[in-house]
Length: 311
Image (cartoon, rainbow, N blue to C red; front, side, top):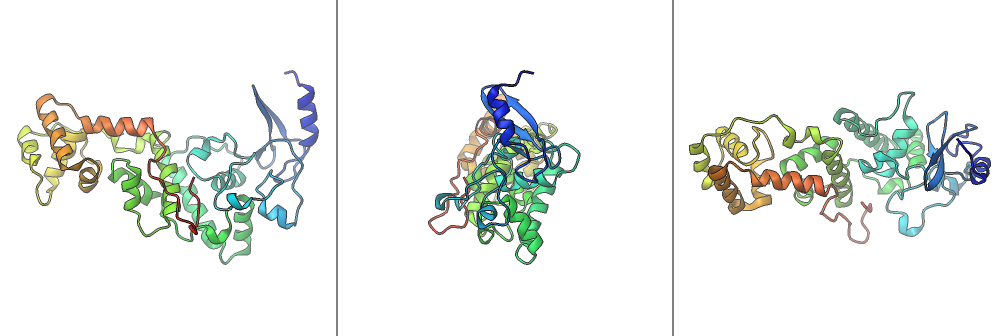
């Protein structure tokens, strides 16, 4: 592989890892994009630049690989830095968490498309680290190494991974409706989590959605006809008939979630369509919406004085 003069010059500026100081990082060349380096020791990925100056206030503020601390406009979020630029994990978690995952990884490669168990573990362990940072100097130092958001702006108990996913499943993956089910938590944090986990459900986590569940037997037409006028409360058999007619599954969203998203008239029209033609228009809407726009339509930005910019 040919190495240009620019690459040679960059190599001189990247003689050591900006995160751990290990010498001679590996060169990563990308067509038409700036070169990057990968540390052979800790796995950090970064662009050429001077190593951080240790034990200074500037160093404590700056993320690995950055020489500048956060500006006042950035203090509410983790801006993307050289160590996360283009990282596929940034689609599924905030930048501070991406840095932490990469830094604590062992010799095994970190999956770019994590499964449910892996992603849930990362969220649980990182949340525990942030909570411990309130009383543990070691945990605080670990958080400050990866986060541009001051510790007092990070939530002590954010909504758990499983709770956010459950809210999305229940509401047919509608970001705004899911957020309303998580009321009481910081709205910016809720919005941040919904955005990342909805994107995961649309891509790497698609197999965990009820859209990918095994097809259910078609319900009897008479059972579907009974649902054209919604009952005051649904029996288990009626729920199965409803989900079977609308989505072709036994277990799907919640009944209130379906009615909140589509309205009783929209549900009735979909049931009539199923009775006439066997089509399931609401399933098609949910699938197309999740695939076409994995980012949330819900705007989670808080009012002035909010804790965390969720963009």
